[in-house]
Image (cartoon, rainbow, N blue to C red; front, side, top):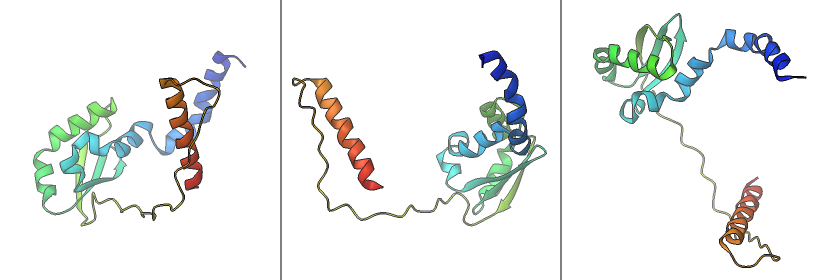
Amino acid sequence: MTARSLAALLPAVTAPAFRRRNPASVQLFTDWSDIVGPAHAAVTTPSKLAAGTLTIACAGPVAMELQHLSDALIARINTWCGQALVARLRFVQDPKAGMRPAAARRAPSLRPAPKCSVPDMQESPLKEALEALGAQILREKQKR
């Protein structure tokens, strides 16, 4: 299959997925903290994008502050996404907005740290880097 014939098939394959969710809107949800900044991301969460209206869940009185900044925020969102994706903002109160659930912490492993060696190489920065890479791979396997 040539690159040209593969490119001709792509729209038919991706159209159903893009009909449900625009890739730019996915970028909006995943890059939210980069778009609005860490201060606003801590108390807001984008919850829905439909017909050009972005619904933002806000904790506390930040909705009023964002209402005043809405024109700048819309411009920033559309610039970030590269298209006029958002025309209006809608704010809803949600005390849990912006809060990320804490990841469950595992107890540290009692196993010794794995070591990896490359015996057939002379001492060099490359050998040290390969040994460090091998040890990291072994640690990742131990976690599973």
